[in-house]
Image 1 (cartoon, rainbow, N blue to C red):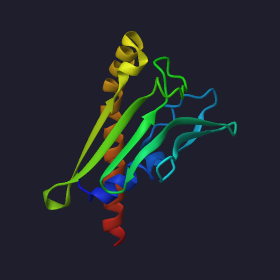
Image 2: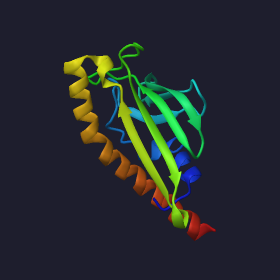
Image 3: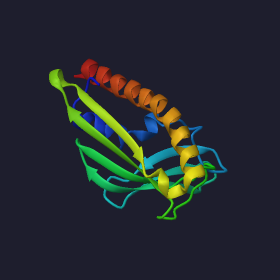
Length: 152
């Protein structure tokens, strides 16, 4: 991606509401906003139109410009499920490349915690979902870079 690791990290985390689709909510009420709290122990959650909040996961590693790890507290039926023995995990790494570019690598893992059937279903679902989400992220990151060049 045509951005520094710090810019990519900030767009992925603090800018998640700019690229995470509003129709990717696990709540009964429509999603109004996605938020990742910028610290270890912070929540990734959705603010809903009815005023409720739904937790997607919790931050385990917060290394700005380098690495983010969070729990994925969603079960195979796409419902919030915070049981630690059942949650999967997502790690996102941001590595500087030549010419001011950044390689972003995302690994969603620990599906075995859900059991064979549910873990297999969730792995298949996220394997199909993350590529499109990362495309949305890349588009927002590129738009932000273009805007900063135009303003700077």
